[in-house]
Image 1 (tube, rainbow over the protein chains, first blue to last red):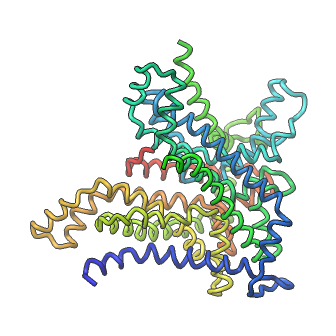
Image 2 (cartoon, helix red, strand yellow):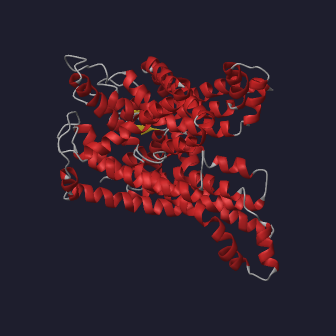
Length: 279
Length: 257
């Protein structure tokens, strides 16, 4: 091997060593564990599909609900994210940068703070209720703001919105103004410009935004735990309890891999529907 | 005339939705009331005073720093080395290979966390604790470092390096005097992002810390039980740290969308 090749491999070794040792190997081991079984709280190696069967028989409807909620969050984020990114790119002139900055300042922080804040806003003695009571719009605190699927979807969409805005905005930045002007000059209505000129040019950004938001929402368990009420409503909550309290690692592992497999199918389908067709 | 105002209003409303919940937490951290509701009480620093005297908070802050600093250092070295090497190599496999580093970010942190717990507890027979958290955090922060540095390298002029070498500079001199000054801002920015991500990260931390707390698991412990108003103060401190790190990083890397 030549000297530069050795150096390059040495320079790449730490990053890929970490990826292999702390990600690929542990995930492979976890996958193996998903085929094991548990007898009286002890792990028994082997090959059994019990954990997967358990996932779909015990948690079947919850599984579907989890995918539906993640899809709702992702669609909400893509729609609102597109409106925001489109406005920032084309409709508010030079203020666009400022709005994008506003979305980016909490990109790398604030996960728990946001969830906690939604609890403070939505709970029965929270900000929203005290506002409504103060304004005389309601006589007693509204209870249905919190502890249901809607609250979880709102909080997750709020947390993930910046992750939808940024890929869409960067796709829109590559859409030349001149194509919009040309369409308008040729008599296209604003709606036609949007649907026939802007959207097709940024669909990779839209699909990327959907994928990011879907993947982040589908595995979340903290938000439903806080805002979803007493009974668990998303699969992540059960993955946690299988791991920590029931000590059923195979079951928790099988649920994780089933969820990731199903997510891959959903995102693959969305990709095929919006991008794959082009070829 | 009214049509003109539609977009600014829409954008302002959406920005309020994005930032409002965070601003509320910050505002109420300076409020003397026990409850987070209107009408507000007077201006007060009592929650901050209460926090500063709290040993558990100090221990959590110390733990968080003891995790975030090594995380930022290690992932900056590994991520930047990978991004730089592929840029210099000029191979068409560079970008796909770098995106492979991002795989851990695509999976739910919950799965990463339990996979690490299984690895440490079942196969390596190692105790959980700070090193385990650092392992998890390096794994999920190095792709961000690699992405930031790769973006900077995209406009890096390698002929300058050849010029330096032709003029008699050694490889080391070239790196220190020519390469590093040009990419330093991106590398520092990437390190700050890794630091902020590690400070804020909760799911991997809560699974792999074993005993003790980080800032985020400390907050978790408090919100799980009550709506303790001192949470607003901790949350504000965490936000102040991550937002200022992010702003400096964005400025250094000139990242714009």
